[in-house]
Picture 1 (cartoon, rainbow, N blue to C red):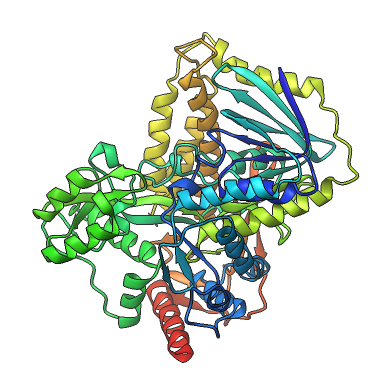
Picture 2 (tube, rainbow, N blue to C red; picture 1 turned 135 degrees about the vertical axis):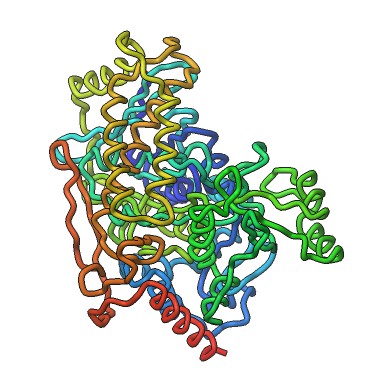
Length: 586
């Protein structure tokens, strides 16, 4: 059995993991373990991508015409757009550090393709390349890189996280990681949904392992769905391509259905990331009312675009390539009037592991950074997750390395290791009734999308929780048709299924608990924002064999009227507030 010892163990090698390693290795020995190639897998490489900072910071870097903008002004906008559910300490951490982190990336070679308000337009691949360059430049000594290994459990000793246990699925061997502190940077649980816009590696591993280890999770009901995600052809399924292009959404009758009565809401829908929330709601309602396509989506048309605008778009995307994929065949059809079927897809998870502004979790020795953490964006993520990953990665790396100073590596309990390994081995050796992991995963993805998706109510959430519990019980009888240890895809799926089930089940229970609508959490049976009872975080932790929920006050300096506001009216008020602030700045 392989063993790696280090001061700091970083689990995940996307943007948050890479930035954490860059910071930690300045003062500590670091091991980075990743399911895929270091800095070339996970969510970051596939992101759109923009990276954000306040206008004043970007102006100092030569990229903004708003020198009067500030982190404080940006903080206020994020709080409004997050429906006042944000942990304000985390928002302050985010906005204060964003400018310096963007400057670092530019210094490490990140390419800028354009600018928007408070944003530099780049690519996920360019961000990853910059982080790899930063690691090469900043590391005071070598980082131990372990690729192709899936961590399936954190190891806890005397109430402290002291390492992790993983599987190298290429060989079927177990790998032990001992460390003084551990950083989780594992992304979201996208693959738990039938339609999603995430990388294959994103299966909720960090959130589920942290929960089982005893850490608190927060805001698990908050899930952002991105609209206009391609459902066909299969080669492009899940792509964000049509999210970034201009087009018109149509139902199966050919009718455009996005109509905005309030001009401020229209502006948000057309010019900000609030379009994710507004377009996703409208699309799902068309499908539910029988006006959707055969795959469960709606239609995206570019027929209204003049030929010269098509030509201009192709100049922006030479050869119709996006994120490394060739869309030339599809775009040829779009020029001729073809309407592609698209739909909302799980894209970002506001909820996750509860952290402090030092990226500490509630269990000693464990830190979290990036999308696997929760609390920063409240009920609606409109600022960049790319900025989140580098800011939190930097802080988690610094704090974890500092905490490791003076500590000794804790010895592992051999009995505990044997217990965790035996649990995995049963999946391979079990000879009782066979239950297909692929069938359970298909059922999970359907339940997640249909019942814990864009629009929710008590009946569907209750049904979802019951069905997910039934799948969890059934999964205890899993046995693999292929008993080989190396390159066994069924075994990989079984490990990931356990984590995805955990995340979606907790998300469904949290959504059932929150009896209001707020941001991306839309309860059709509670169509109002309830600031009297629900301007509170839902925190969940594992107690014995059940999930225990508690609601806690939001960390904020802002006091709101304790009122109930109809959900649509709350969006209008937020839109008016933001548009009014923008006009004042001009």
